[in-house]
Image 1 (cartoon, rainbow, N blue to C red):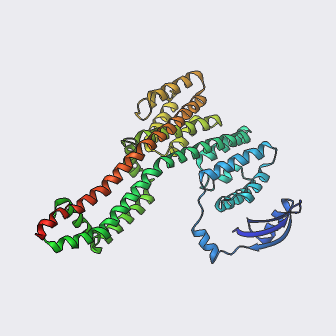
Image 2: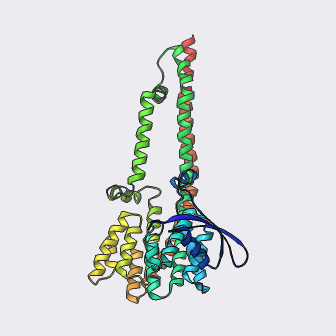
Image 3: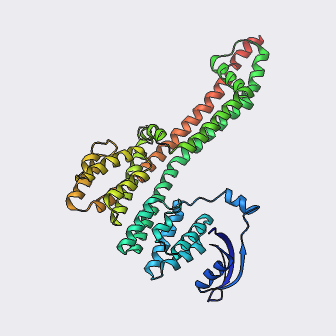
Length: 406
């Protein structure tokens, strides 16, 4: 039966006025759900799907890892306090600041109320990653869902912190690169043509650097050249964003990330930290090894790691360990392989993986600080050389003007 969204105003037992949205098959169903939560309904209105609401739906807010980390932490705290799952979901759906997550949690609450398991209800929505759903399923089976939610929260918080470190490392060089491009384009469009007219009035041949700038400026200010270039750049950008998860494209780009001269080591450490943390979290939550390897391979974010995980999975299925196949992939340093081998011998692979993740988290932080210290003077030199070179090229013909005037 199709469901609709209703705007509900109700009075809680404490006397507080509550206003929220919920999904129900009818107005009577919405009223019944409000009463089942111990509140007195005041008004129930059907939310229109036209006009402004349709615009809001088009620009749907994305559920970020930070939102899921906060949700997991709050959910774990409520479960540990003895609140039932349905009551926890209702509270979290009401107070979630993300409108998309609010709607998703309302639907999850409805499915759980109808008898679905929490993991089954969450698996219907792409907002929840497979890592989270598998751990919740393991927690439901083992009867330690509150502990599992704490593990999920810790893992996601660490991943959010890792993402922030990546952004901090990339912000400065990207900002300087954008400024350099804007300055170059601005000079080619507005400054170089003025000098070009001045030089042509005196006659004579221009020096090679100046002539190159004039030719480049002529091309850039010509709509027959600039417009097709802009269109091609836009199309390539859209195609890349749309197909960046395509296995054929990732098979080319992902290995190149680890070979970059400055950022390659950083990307490798980030990938290793994410792989070991996710695998440790899944194993700690009681997820079977083969299932955990499937999930980690899909969520690793790099096809090089995914290929290594596939080899590990085959080895584990045959009854062998994880260390041997990992040693055949250069992306895994010898230290990682040896620590996993020790973990297999002692029966503590999950704790050993967690130690590796903590080590690489510290390495990422240290590498980020080193890159920031290196990139700041380097980018200043690049920007200064670019602008200074253009200024020198523009002023070279001035030394010939006096000879031409004479």
